[in-house]
Length: 170
View 1 (cartoon, rainbow, N blue to C red):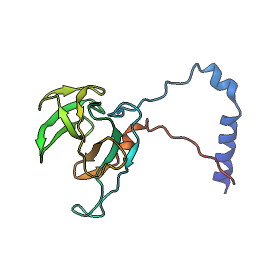
View 2 (view 1 turned 180 degrees about the vertical axis):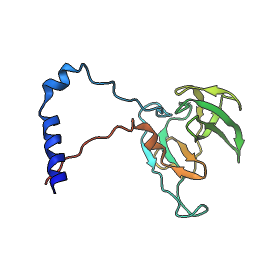
View 3 (view 1 turned 180 degrees about the horizontal axis):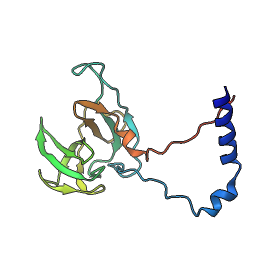
View 4 (view 1 turned 135 degrees about the horizontal axis):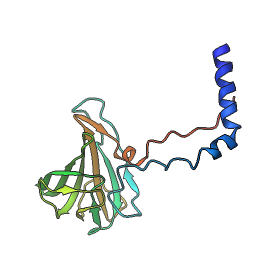
């Protein structure tokens, strides 16, 4: 209990001493995410990520973003194009990023080539219609992300990773 009391006392001192912080100079810049939306707004999430329970189990290994046919699709982050071609009748681009992630985008009219270096925001293709399961939108971009064999929710790439305090009732 004394440790908790000491921690709360220190926290109270930090939270009630703005003059000390002001003298130290401006706050550091807010960290920016290394990743950006691959479609221009609006880009509603038509179908969310649903992690599979097992490697080959059912799920949705990415998100489907609503868009317009022909809309520019951009690389979400800096990387190297490791796949850019037709796959099962659809244009697919896959980008390897320096942090070990791989992002994938489909269906596209592909405008990049395998081996090409891209930066976030580089146009990698144009959104093509015909993505199955795209309800209520003229076209949908399936955007996936994975690290190794683990699929991740690509929407989690869009945050700065900054910790925010939440309200507490106690």
